[in-house]
Length: 400
Picture 1 (cartoon, rainbow, N blue to C red):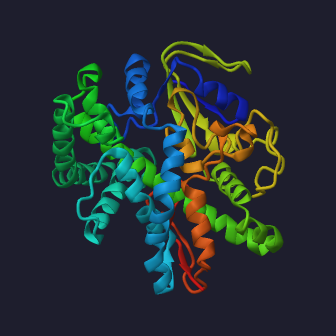
Picture 2 (picture 1 turned 135 degrees about the vertical axis):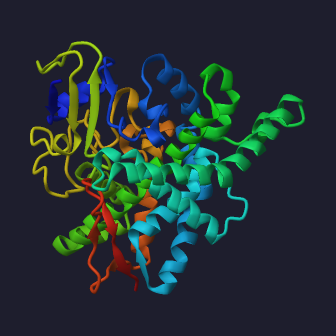
């Protein structure tokens, strides 16, 4: 079977938009990804996406940022700053865990450290299962670990959350509760459209696990890389970096530039369901595996001047996002793009619907820098030895 690799920005963008190219990156990770939104195609994907899209609206993101995220970022960072040190990978996961649980519909009745530790472990395990195609460990061992974690997660978190939502929906149907009394999360949305979606509780479990890991993994990864790039920028251009510390819009550009250089998923894969011809002339035969090299496309010199340089001040073409293809595109574009990366204020000046949303990663980076974080001079960062992806296993920092 033919394998075709696309590494130009325009070709990757075109391929993302082709309806006859089906998601294929997560075939190996079926233990946690089977029948999840990200792997569905055609009508099944359209129906599921329509249900879940209702949660991911800009007004919701803006509300969370104003009423919820600042406090979460501050409260999670505080004990690490007080202790004088932190591991950015752990800090990133712990900060975002409350939000990803909220989005997925996973209740945290105690809110204590043990509960957070459990969700942190599950999210890490589910992430490794989802990206099994890039693991350097024995795939069967990883699958067994993921299956065991899913069983524990189901019993300890999903079942109680499921029971509470079913009770709320029954009370709402009886007229005891109004629409505003229902949670706005993925789990509630799936339950409300159960018959329409035609899913079972195994799919429900994997979908909630997918949201828990996808949001936490990609956000923690972007946060750690953003801090790393910013620390290096301080050494190269301290005046520009200092301006960014006090300018949220410029700091957001730092995050977007980091996402371009370090996409959480460096490649995407598609399987051709029919012959496809891209605008640039590339012919893709039916059955071919198409590798979309996002990391290379995000450094396409025809689009990004000095593409390997971290430059938050760079200008990009008006039809190209500053983060390149970091959030994918087409039908499988990341559903949480604006939650993680935010919305630049300049998108449509004067239009309230395009009011700036800083995004989770920018808020986390801002708080980290305000606390005086810097790389630990005695413990250098370590790359993840269990993945071929561009991930850190640990990134020690000190404060003050």
